[in-house]
Length: 237
Image 1 (cartoon, helix red, strand yellow):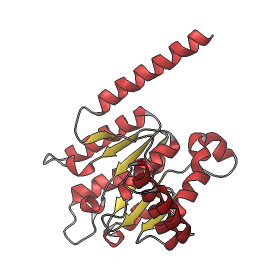
Image 2: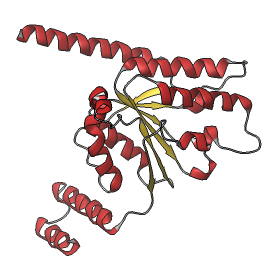
Image 3: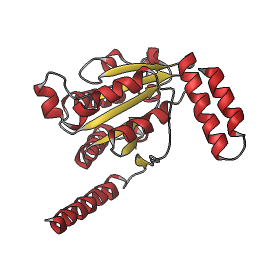
């Protein structure tokens, strides 16, 4: 039975590798490495929310039975440099699934219906891969609301929203934006995402946590004396 289990694991790994090669046939979709030893801090309320919903993500049937539907994803809004992509890596790490970046801005074509067809094909590939976090970065650059919004983009948005709401695959959609005011309201509705968070300047507690993490890295690198760093950490308490 042990050998059988090992063979099954190797078989599943082989299948996932084949799916990964299939999904990366175009640079529109890419896998982002999630270092196991990387530590991300200062996530505040999002960190708590994610930990509370982790079991629901991995067992959506039980979550539905208990009246707590599995999280479909989040929107994280904030100015550049506030760690939105780092938060996406931390999400994949905590959920224990791969992180896939989907550059939706690269799929538009001049052919009528071509953009929608490509979008549908890529979403099907991501769904077929299995449990993962799908990162769509700075989405307002594609779907910003203004007087010149092209009908092709609106058709793409409609297709994306329908997939986000009705998909069966266990995909956690992680959307980032620099300016939420430019996003269409349909993208923010419940049923398509499960939470909306904002990344501003860190709070005092988050800032202390970040400084303490940096101090520990300086100690391990031999750049600071441990006693000096311990004294600074105590001052932050």
